[in-house]
Length: 416
Image (cartoon, rainbow, N blue to C red; front, side, top):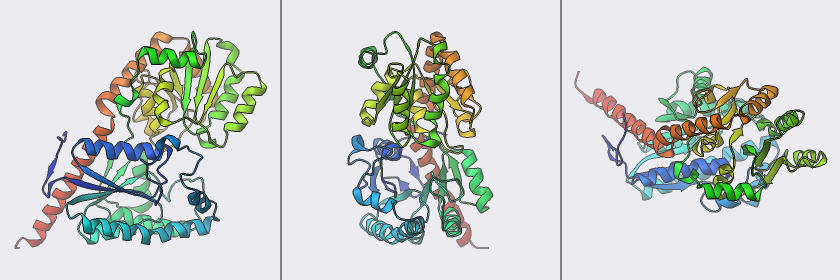
């Protein structure tokens, strides 16, 4: 059931939401936070964001990058030995709870708190529950998944996570496989919904003139362009994809790559491309402002995602699709929940770079199919996966939480 703007719950109209997070508010994190907050505001809901001091996702989104800290002190904290880093995360509960309590005291019209879940974070949930304010956790991380920095205090992290997942009013997971892993690890958890990521269609709309300008700027005229957008890090495997493609690049003289982003593997990949004299076929833009992304996507005919987390919902996939750029992506379950094979994109067996290369080469030769599939992908985002769709589902979820709480309270107080 769709939820209309200004949804009315048994507790009254949702007028104010607190968005609390402990991220640096950069790169994809910032895109997601702004997407949810801005969509709520467009529905007439007042949204305030409490974050790490100096990590406001609205402060300087153009300057953020996957490998650049938003504040110098954050870089210092991230370099702490793992045990100390995790203790710092745990200690931040006190700071977060103090700030959230102060906010709640000043805003009696607060309908609910929406928190981007972080490891070792539980005190704000305890505080919200104590004050009778619903708290909905958006789960993007877990002590139960493989992480870049292996956990030192894993048992403690799991214990806090179990308590938090059970005592939150509701949970929002980006994929069903992620929810199922949480249930397997913790047993029963709070009511949960599945909400993949999204993209705003108006921010990913371009003219033919913009496409022509970008293609001319990068020397892409007359070529079929396969793009990549994101962090250059080992787990996204864009470097591995390029290494596998180079051996077959002569089979596709019409094909060029446009790779957007930076990260740990960027310098070595750029050196590899330059040493082989392929800079005119494999173009690496480096870090760009997020506002430049739609223009770069406009120059692409297809896109590749060599790898992704097997439980995540990659934002860039939705941005590709919003720009009518059909993606070629690994067949992880969250991606199978979004892509319809041959209609809104294509998939290959996860981890098989040769298969990824073969898919890109095959469809790069069929521009009519690229346009048709890209058009269907854009239609899907337009009608089903904009940020507005996500927050309407969220508001409906909140209404169900409030209704359930009211029913339970009535059952408790009713005479036998």
